[in-house]
Length: 493
Image (cartoon, rainbow, N blue to C red; front, side, top):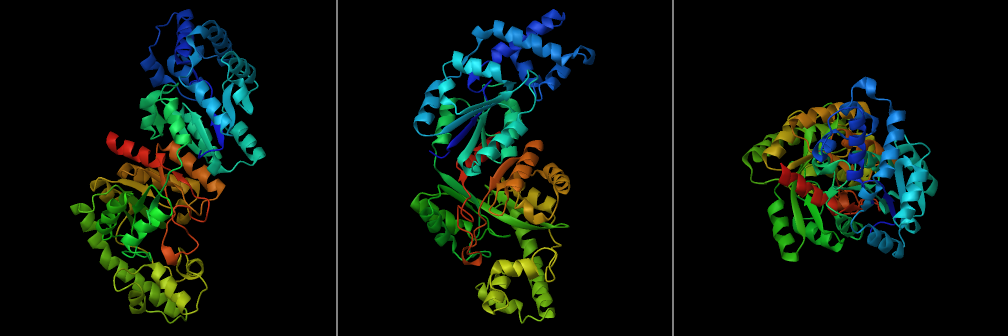
């Protein structure tokens, strides 16, 4: 079982009460002499916080939420026969408890009402804690969830949130944990898909995800850019690491994909063809492309455009290093790289071999990383052009390692809005260097902008020996359903 801590929403997830809620809304509308709404309209209007839902269906002067809430709860009790346990809920809750999972309910509803309903439907005994509100105003549950999560000291890799609304995903993002939303709940499949949330039709699919131990990695490099494993060796290594799928994302190159694909087919491993573009912006901006057609004409023209730029840039880095007193030449770096692609990692490795630095990371941190004295700007390909090239090749585009941009959240959001207009699909929500604060901030940003998540180890082999494929610095675990979500997005495009 992949997850040890299961956070559950209650209404619309464990209990199927959507039709009850619709009846309550229509009771209110009838009392006001207004036309009732149907389920499709309910899904179109409902949002969180729930008071906004009433502002959408009522004139502003009619929205007295304290009165509406009181009447709703009275109507809800009256229509309780319209509420049932979600199909398979008791069986799944029981199975998870028997397998040692800790289960918690986090709900915006009044705790007393939730406790009463867990007992009525015979599921109270499966939960370690029920965290509800102390009022009936259906307010945000994020702060309550965060306080509980921190108090228990739960590892983010061990937890998942199961819910039915975007607010549940928002809560999961605030905790920095994985999230799956059911489609039969209070916001429905259409809206959830518009926000690129990962959804499932029923609790059987939720069970499959919780028990699915498969992992993936969407950010790796071979010798066709600045990794130390050949494409074939990289595929073999992915298999050895226990990955079920991975993406080859060499810098500005697709030269290794054919070789990697051939080997992946031979050993039964799923390979996602990819690329990592280094873009010319005011900061370190890398765009990952996944599911690309490596023979696409637009993509190949973009790569060709970058070849001369990369050589110029690497020569400039070497020149700046010589200006700092280090005996480093581009020809030496080219020889180290095998006479093909030269990246900053090759230059850093040369610095280590000559004794100027102890590690590649030290070289980046002191000399050739963004803002350091031997850093050279990119000036050939904009991030917008990179995104458009990836999309033209049929791929999904993701902004990589957001922490390396040096931007604060406001600046990042401006950049992402610009890139979204160009076709950006999402961000790397999983990355070895992310702190818990990064994870929460970046995933919240993704939810606001309706972005999907990708991520990976950024494996380079010996170039970054502290990074392991699939697990990063040791605690990276990207679930297989992230890949399934990407495939769903491609099918809906």
